[in-house]
Picture 1 (tube, one colour):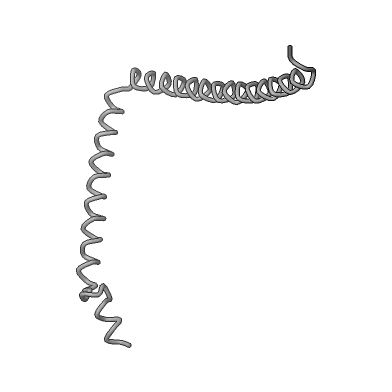
Picture 2: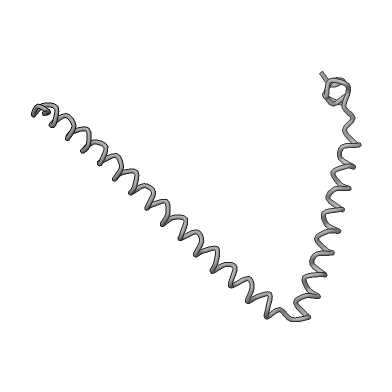
Length: 104
């Protein structure tokens, strides 16, 4: 038979383990709630987008295509501008602009 002290130590260990498991369980419940909220938000946003796509008109499609072309041409122009700026500043082998070194 076990002594009273042995039973008390086993009881303390069991209580401690029970507290840790309850805490872990609460954390997991909270995480599950968080993930469910994210899933609900995603589903709502997805439903709204699907509804918008379903109700789109031909005029909207044409406007989107025009905006896409305009955006692409502006991106190309900004790329050309960046290349022109790079050509204006000539770098030596150390990556220092030649203009800056001649002034010093």
